[in-house]
Length: 449
Image (cartoon, rainbow, N blue to C red; front, side, top):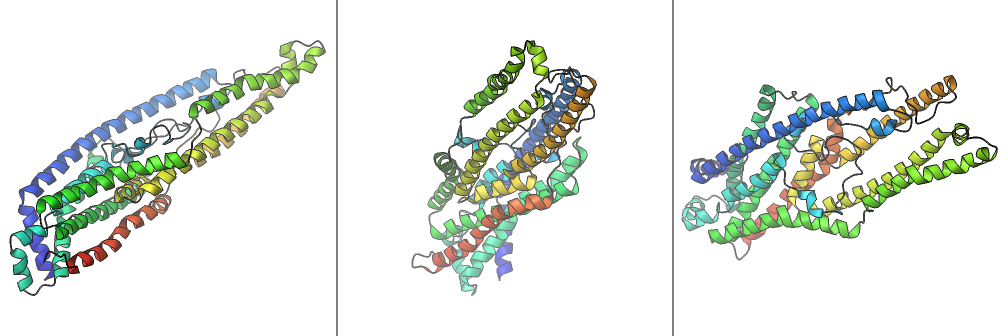
């Protein structure tokens, strides 16, 4: 009996003009999305090549001990995953971080990618298919016919959810089948096993997300006999879950966790590297100048590299403090917003694609490891050059052709899944709550049938 109801629901949806329009609309939007994302990926790739070329030229012509770290800033190589998910960070790694303090609504900025296609458009169209799945049968009197055959109410509900969900995930399945084919025939690098595993995880998360909204629409259809009221309630809940809750979470996080002003930090960094540095230098060279040495001779007597290292350490500590505050604020915003299934889906997809909040920690670890190696190499080169030429200064040009360059290494699928799993579980947990709500609606005094 359950399969009979499910087959009936599938056939009714497939024959409906509503489903046809929704299916075509999703496919057209998908092809527009993937074309735009592919164009942006190629643009990012060309920009990456230009940055690397410019960096190598600058290192070859202008690098010195003082300017080396600034000239050899890390650059992230674009990933083919950018074609389906817009990354949070592009280009250079070291930007002071991202903060919700400037504009909290940025945390849910809508980009034309898989998150927007499935998370926003997919959920809305799924509610469009399910908002009248029960009350339509009641109003047409076919519900009495089904009940007269002896089918339990709960089986009717489950059959309709099963059949309707299979139809609702059909466009999503088609999209995820087209994605690897598109990548294969386009000029983008093919997905590696890590990225294919990420894509499969995103597909499964999308199915869970879409089925949840179909269940939600079916619940509204079970509660309200009037189809207009059912549609209005579905749309209201959709606005609450997709817009209101995520935005509210961002503002709450902004209120609770304060992030230092980035402009003030940048001014403090400039003061450290300029006025404070030279105040220290002048204090150290003063005794030598008092002995009759010139300023340039006196500067050769002090260890400029040690001063630079001390300043760099203070700058790094200041930036780390800012980065930690940004991370606390962003994570708190996500925790508040995770009341919504959309936020759980959004964060899960971002983490599975490698572009989520945890990417900042991964990048920071990569950058810090590279900086340790680069500074050790630079200090070694400086000391060797100083031995050969005692008059060598930190502002003089130095050969860094052998210095290790920063190379971005994508995080493993295990790392991605570990950070995406809590949000996937939270998204799945909604299915634990919905059955209890359905049982209450079906067997309460206000039931429809």
